[in-house]
Length: 149
Ligand code: PNS
View: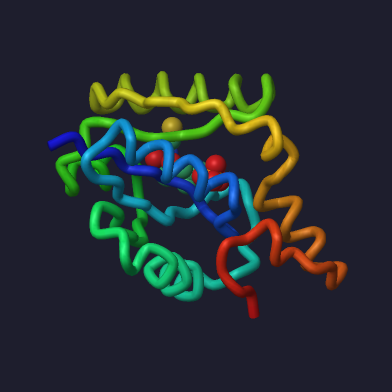
């Protein structure tokens, strides 16, 4: 059984994240979406909302589970018997960040990070972009695969 944890703050989860999960299901038997805290970012949507919205989104996909976690991603992965982390990159900026996180996580626990390149049409879609547009009351329904409050 190949299990991957897909960790992120998902504030909110975007169509880019959804695409990564769908593509990840080609590689892994099971994906555990781990909603964690990024201490560098201010949160907009409550954790409980993100958890509920994602559980609903993946209700019919039995190979995907959704959990909130505190603490280190590697500890969360171990808890779920996951030997892989799934992450996406859109740009060289993402690449540098992902490389240092993957290195740190491998050093911490020997866990392997599998990185998928975002589709080019998703290159500019980020949770922070959605939060900004949402703050200006713009319609972001095409960018987030579930309704926002
Ligand atoms: O969607 P994000 O904001 O890029 O997600 C970042 C997240 C939550 C995956 C990252 O901050 C994280 O792994 N946090 C848990 C703490 C941890 O494991 N830190 C060491 C990572 S090298």
